[in-house]
Image 1 (cartoon, rainbow, N blue to C red):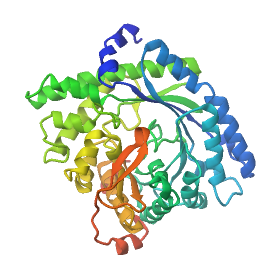
Image 2 (image 1 turned 60 degrees about the vertical axis):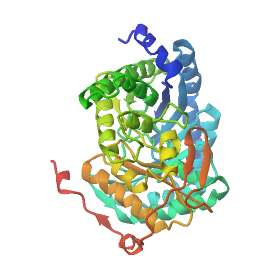
Image 3 (image 1 turned 90 degrees about the vertical axis):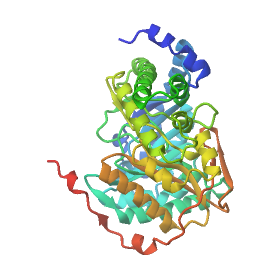
Length: 452
């Protein structure tokens, strides 16, 4: 049993070091909303989300008020819509996205994830329809987020789907050109996607999850940075131990909030996601943690090693603080959402190639990266393939959230506002990958996937 006295130790962290609960996310199964009539299915979806999550925002606010713990976002994730809509007569799933958006607005959440498809080994007709629907669905809604899983260690990489996602991202950017390609900020392409991720834009409620559950995503880069200031110049053993102890304290707070929300809403507690999620605010940066370890700038030689230490220590400390750790659980490096990453990218010290290397050891991938608007669909697909290969070979989750900003070129900025922040447009390699992407088919799973 967690005692409230434990939370008192975090008062300084909350007041001065940007410690918060980044999200309380309710996962909801929509499998029972499938219907031969798309209209009836959309009605069922809207009704069920409103019924199950109607008290989510109010409960989060009550916990905030009672414990003095900031909860930045209240969100919902649902069953991948391609699985639900497959039973319907619809040839375009935009109407499902609009139903999700209406429900999200009605219950007052910040985002709703699950306009998703799982195509790591191939596409059903429903998957194809959903992927074709993504650009319009995201352009015509505000709160709906989408994800597509194109690979896994067990299945390999569906390169036909990878090629399609490059075209999908380009189309989504074009449809929201007046907003800097905003639709792409709500779209993630995964390898080894997890079923209990509480963070947007990649959250969905997996088919192995219960009817309804509560997940919590903690944060606190500023807290870790502050703790490391006290051991400046000491050896890496001390650095790792300091991060572990700090992650333990952060996670205990997440465990308390998850338990309280679960009890008050009357649904099971799912997981605590340990990820250090930055914001554009000064003092809330993963880049600043790496620089506190001794790097002149994030992106410098040594950055990947520093990030590996951070990611591992966060997991080791956090897993001792909660009986149910899951989601992504590590350190996020979204360029537009981290003040230090933004500054380094604008100065040319942080490149997409270095970011790719960093994703080998962090918990997500190439996240919230703006590239020139004339970047081809094939280049985007090749970037996705590279990132999926890292995830497949290393048996970890990797992802790409990339914005080919319409009309923008290297050195420009794209401002999305709020937690999505400001993305500096960074260069990409201009060599063509068109013939590579045109091959289609599947990249086979690695030998070490055969574990049975």
